[in-house]
Image 1 (cartoon, rainbow, N blue to C red):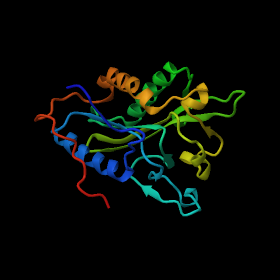
Image 2 (image 1 turned 90 degrees about the vertical axis):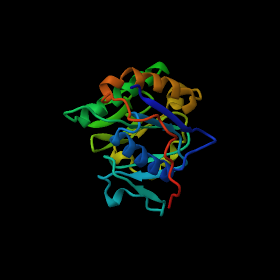
Image 3 (image 1 turned 60 degrees about the vertical axis):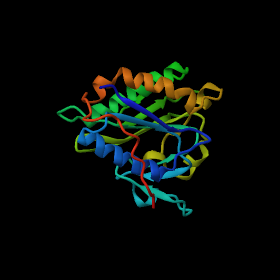
Length: 233
């Protein structure tokens, strides 16, 4: 069964983070139960800070900005308009290898950004995709990855900086990293590259690697509408 891609909303139709989190949980339950195919949610969020399990108290914004605490790995990060956010909710093959799953996501992102003229790479000991130090500045992160695995199925995923404002990262220590910076496709290429300009290429690359990313299975019934939460607190 092929992956199902769901484009939930792109600027100006941004998707509330808490609503998307509840949707992830609902889709996760259905994928675990075999009722829905492996699914990738793709979207843009309004501005929001999220804290993974390893976030320390001193890393939170000191100005009272709201932070949503979630169960993914990693530390504090920012999501906002202009970032292509992807939530692969998929069954992993056994034996479960979360590190391998993250490495595959990195390879997918590197292939996509290369097509837009950005020679990104990985950095030992640090997840995500990076542009290495050059005459324009130090090592800088162009995509973040943070995943959670429960009952053999993943949640959360990646955020690729496309055309987003980078200033909100300056209010935190992004991903707990103090000796590097952040960047975007638009900043690196010198032209506007929006999430909508990238999403089809991202879907293509994820689809091409799906046999490596996840277990293939046929869901037990016909795909129903996405199980959006009826209420979000």
